Amino acid sequence: MLDALQEIDPEEVPADAVVIGGGLSGLAAAIHLTRAGLKVMCLEPRENFTKIIGESLDWSAPLLLARLGLPMEALVRTGAATFKRHITVTAVDGTQEEFLPGAWLAERPWNVETRTLHLDRLQIHALLQAEVRALGTVTLHERAIGFEVRDGRILCVQTSGGQSLRPRWVVDASGAAASLLGREFNLRSASYGPRKIALWSHFPTDEWVEGTTLYTLSSRDEYMEWIWEIPVSPGVSSIGYVAPGSKVKQQRAAGLSNAQILWEQMSGFARLSEIAEQSPIEHVAATSFLCRTYSGVCGPNWIIIGEAASQSDPITGNGVTAALRHAEEGSALIVRYQHREKIPSLARFVYDMRVSGMGRYFNSLIEKLYYESPVRSFLGIFLTARVYMVPAWLTNVVYSRTRPRKLFGTLVLCSAMITLRAAAWGLFRVSSLLRRRSGRARQPVSAELISGHNLIVHREERRALHLQM
Ligand SMILES: Cc1cc2nc3c(=O)[nH]c(=O)nc-3n(C[C@H](O)[C@H](O)[C@H](O)COP(=O)(O)OP(=O)(O)OC[C@H]3O[C@@H](n4cnc5c(N)ncnc54)[C@H](O)[C@@H]3O)c2cc1C
Image 1 (tube, protein in one colour):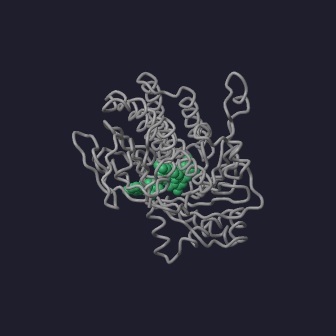
Image 2: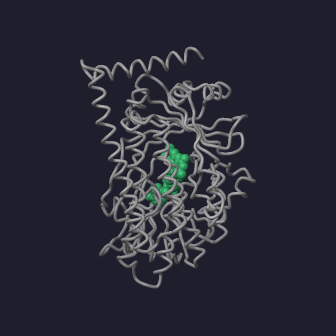
Image 3: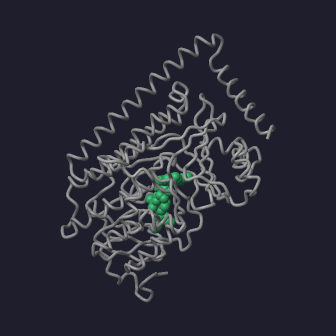
């Protein structure tokens, strides 16, 4: 059950830090901590990772990967990643618009990297695991099942194999589904939107572009459902469908399998339909998630990172950046205060402010501007996409450039994000009001009846489109 130190009893392994979870954020934290000289044990029950989703990254992630020893050019050269040069948004009627950072940003004085990546996560995972092993980090393939806590400190981590580990520091990287310390300490959390389901598969694609494509499935008046197409490695695209859980359940109740649901949704767009016809969908992975951000994600000798701290909606493309940032910043805190008994309250407060501030910012912006219908209905899908992407992109660039760690920088960043959230909320309210007014003017009988009718007409249009193809 032990990697790296096969014959040693885990209770005897002197670990300064235990990292719970060997996903992206856990491996990143293990690397940072071990490089800084700490003895680290990683708890990860899974021995094989097969269904990891391939991700489309935002523009801040490549630097964070490079600091882990995975530079962008090398990843592309070895086929573990492809370049993402733009995002293409496809409207429900098939019209498209491309979004990319202006070329002038790459020039002086800005010098912004305008390329980013799509990851083949199986390959990236293998590279990170190899680095963890090479550094001598011990991985114990057991689950953390309980904690002994006194005065807010974690004294002991109990494992499914009956071990009682007593590290000085604990990092919770157990992911959104487990959220171990969030539950253990009963932390406050804010959730955004309904629980959603993603169904996805990998497809061979002869013709692919160095960009992410988002296909819009919902009309202006509906809560958003969408499809991603991400070329995770040359000639292989990850294609996935995201919708509220209730919508997927309805389709399952109508007798459709996950593969049929994905096929049905893809068949609304000529390109996706062609891909599905060329390579019948066999293995469809499914995951359900609720976008949720915890508060109070750092204690005296523990810290929460990655999705265990904050799950961002996949469409924000901020999940990998957040996981890697938390891992880097959380590890730096532990390294900085390793000779003290605990992380000082102010440092905890500032880390928590950044983690929960960023989580709330991305999740609230995407729900209000994109998933909910009023702003899309008012501005149209392309302008809405721009209204979301510009501040989201800028916030990440500013974060990466300034790397706020102390109180002042964090306060400035969080105040800017609160202002932008307030602006998004204002735009949402105004759009809702205008839509209600214009709805009343146009529909004197019953707004609900007619918008219900619109929904049916829209569905029928899509069905007709399927038949034509
Ligand atoms: C559908 C979907 C699409 C996405 N698309 C994108 C995208 O395009 N771009 C992007 O940037 N991000 C995307 N993301 C987000 C990104 O994948 C995640 O943010 C990232 O993988 C989180 O990594 P993590 O290490 O925090 O969690 P995880 O990868 O979930 O790792 C948690 C680990 O903890 C282990 N674990 C759980 N319980 C225990 C326990 N009790 N003891 C020990 N170990 C335990 C698990 O086995 C797991 O390996 C997407 C997410 C989803 C759901």
